[in-house]
Image 1: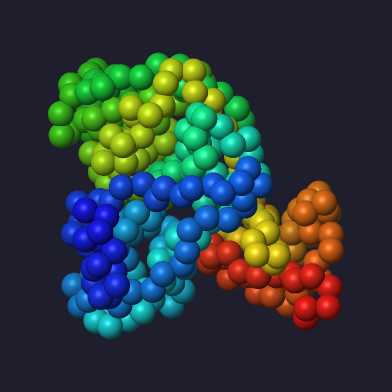
Image 2: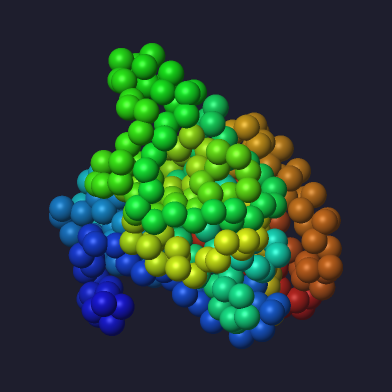
Amino acid sequence: MKLLQRWLVALGMAVPLCGVQAADYPLATSEQQLVGEVRVLKARYEDTLADLADAHGFGFNEIVAANPGVDPWLPGDGTAITLPGMHILPDAPREGIVINLPEYRMYFYPRDEQRVSTWPVGIGREGWSSPIGQTRVARKEANPSWYPPKSIREEHAAQGEILPAVVPPGPDNPMGPYKMNLALSGYVIHGTNKSFGIGMRVSHGCFRMNNQDVTELFPQVPVGTPVTIVNQPYKLGVMDGKLYLEVHTPLDEHGFPSVLDKQAAIQQLLQERNELVSGFRLDWQKIRDLVFAEEGVPEVIGEPYGQF
């Protein structure tokens, strides 16, 4: 399947909308900070960005951010579409599962293996924010039933929809085929019966994955696996002797209301990561452009002194 997908991408064609396997990247060293690559394909007349995101392993928000000015519902035949497949790894322990909320993306570091896998995820919407911090996988279940908590049942009832006390396993189950309960009461990593919400703020705080993605992840994650949830709209990394910055739109409740606030946040990050950025001459105009654009694609912001 992966060889077919690469062949279709090389021809500028969309792959079938059955989903793709995780983006798996070997880590040459424990210090490697960037993985993947940015690709470009030509949209067909019937493509939407949602279709292309699902077909190529991206979330909706990240593919929209990477393609400013493109109509997400009618890109147009022949329109160049950026696939934002390069990622700076989050500044977090490289063990188990790491979720970066503003990125709408999960990273998984298998134990005793020098690689990382990554998938898009849906996160909690405003008023039902996903948590931040460290926890672990407390319980796993295949073909789960869903027991809507009282708060969710009341919310749906207020909208005229009466939820049953239990939804059995099957295609109508919001949990999908697998779920992994975290040691944070009420929070779960699970599949879905509504794939459109992947890479968006749609859940009641849980982490929603495409069914094929959670099916791939589930057997790799033993109970007790550490889970780190971070809020890093700005990420720094070094590759081939150059300093990169990756900028995502901050979440509203954890974000910065103005461009000046965002610039201040970047300056604070650069100060906090001084051990990483020292020795690089920074391109402040490029930094300002990236902070303003919030496209989620890593770009060079610094080269060793004497290179600019």
